Picture 1 (cartoon, rainbow, N blue to C red):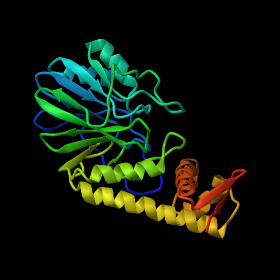
Picture 2: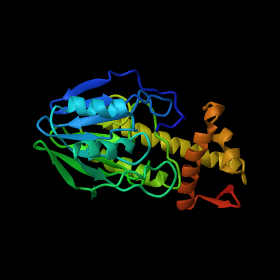
Picture 3: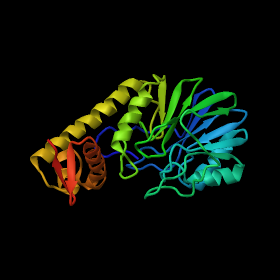
Length: 284
């Protein structure tokens, strides 16, 4: 899900694309303000196939995945259990006999409890698909169970919602965590990969620049939060939103408040802010 605090938006995309030998992308028919053109479902392999992020339960999309696979689907992989990424996984696995791989859904709202992996993936694990390795990278922040997959032959990282094309992503507490998100971005940057293949939008061919932009954008927003709390002590998050997100349409203030809360929780963890009875103050 993308965050409504930027005007950057991904453009229209072809529904089916062959991105590289053994790597195809099928865009799910779930376009929206929060998903851009739709959720990117990736298919790896030619003689045996792994499917990454089959998206929401849309019958036509699930059927299309099986139609284009062209070989047995052995694995269904999930980056995280938000409703635009994982609900179709269990149904696709039942239809194909594939192994479900990912991390279990955490507690809280907007989590797909139908996703119960046959094997829970840990940072550094590797899945061998048709002779090519997919390396697991645990990237908590957008979701505590979020993982990315590095296709080692191409040196591409498939990022789910950790990094997307054309926008930033929602960090929605309590499962979303801004401090963990920034740490995970720094961790991802250390891979110095050739490209990022996001869960929404087009391939990102300048990974370091984009990751640096996201980190700078988040820290710039954090600085606005500090200024707003200093100038307007003892306000609630809802009352602080207009001071921090003056550049955002008021219709989107609900989502903006979630990201604002994530920033405030990080500032509290850093010892720079405090909340009493729902009202926030700066700690000098």
